[in-house]
Amino acid sequence: MDSIGLIRDFLKDRLGVEPENVISGALLADLGVDSLMMLELMFEFEDRFGIKLSSDLKTPRTVGEMVTLMDGLINSQKS
Amino acid sequence: MSQRRVAITGLGLVSPYGGDLTDFFTRLSAGESAVRYLLTEDQPRPLSIPFVSCPTFDPDAALGKPLASMMDRFAQLGMAAAFAAWDDCGLPRKAGGESRNDWGVAWGTALGGTLAYEKGYRELWQKGRERLSPLSVVLGMNNAANAHISIQLGLGGVSMSHTVACASSAIAIGEAFRRVRSGEATIMLTGGSDVPQAYGVARAWEALRVMAPGDAETSAHACRPFSADRRGLVLGEGGAALVLEDWEHAVARGARIHGEIVGYGTSCDHSHLVRPEAEGQIRALQLTLADAGMTPADIDYINAHGTATTEGDPVEIAALKTVFGDCADRLAVSATKSMHGHSLGAAAAIEAIVTVLALREQTVPPTAHLEQLDPGCAGVDHVTTARTGQLLRAALSNSFAFGGSNAVLAFRAVAQ
Image (cartoon, rainbow over all chains, first blue to last red; front, top):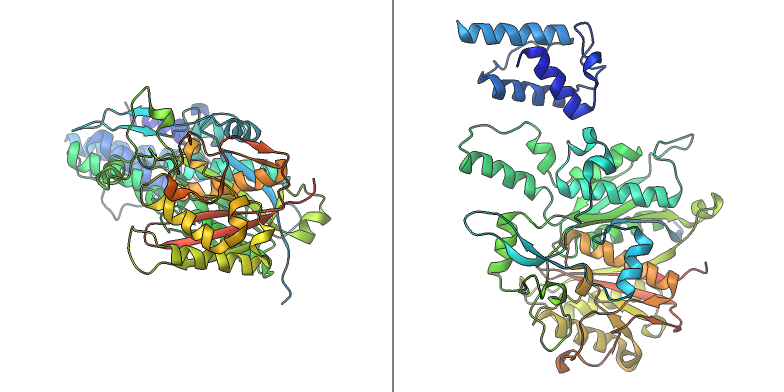
């Protein structure tokens, strides 16, 4: 699964957010992702892709920033 | 400060029978047991015990998936019971014009989120994982239930949990009662919830040799308080909640008043961790009567702690006989744990509700499966089939915990 797919699945499962609302420009906070839910989302991401996120990572604000962050990490993991 | 009268305006629980509160009390009055045989798939040896579950409780349906996924089962049961009690009291879940900043929550739980932590141990030690979900802390913390309740109902006053083994929710209700009576709080949401099905917890209770045995055939009758052939207690899960409200506030808004809570007393045996002592229980009973401004002659029903252990039952009856003296013979007593089991931190809240309903409906629910009374438990009026037609003015609910902590609540009937 790609990053956006994971985010959509997670938000649908945990917060009942419809996938069509999970678009690049949407603010994560508007979708109901608070600091706790962000930690859980990061955890799920680390788990799924076998990646350890650095603790000084800048917290993404939008779905698009989250996707960019995740894709970058996945790619650097592969290379 | 003058003392306020305290009305009970909301009652709610997650019923092991699957129905509503009316159904719950009807079944208890009919002597119907909710105890079932539980066989798990746990390793290395499955649990095989009589148990009380709430099998039809669907947390996602009751709370919505986003909220349910932020909670361990003890908090889910607690939140669902709290919503039921709140809806029953007739107030909207979202605050309107009225400030709720002195409205609070006092919750009882013996185990809190033990199940969430046990899940974590399984992940780490059985599945070989190195990390746990960041939600584990907020799922497992003992004050999760009261915190969620405060958030969901917008209650800005005290939000606390009480962990006093089997008396947890009796003490929560008592402390809530005091806050409303003193005028500190206009409304307190109180009660308790617990889920003792954590593998380590159930096994630990088994090791104490206080749990009644049973299989698919016999489990329904496994818990027999005061009976000569009693074999011990039956654990169960549950959640139950009450809304305690300043009397004048309740009357002013035209709320239905199910009953009045009038007294609370608590004591410690200060002698032994698990062997109860009549002397400590007597002090709790006397403190409660004094707190309520009542005498033994004013009490028409006792919902006993009555867990059906060999040691506990006769001690409780001895305490009642001492306190009630000449009135003991005609004192109606029943132990409804024979049917709803012992749900630890939820037990006293369930029994408080049963006691309030007994007064409201003027019906004493029975001790089920009591065919041959243990002579050591004789001396009070044991109710073995539902009793109506006998005036019930006031009643007590006893909770006597491991650790020697005793708590007794007093309730008075209110004309309906």
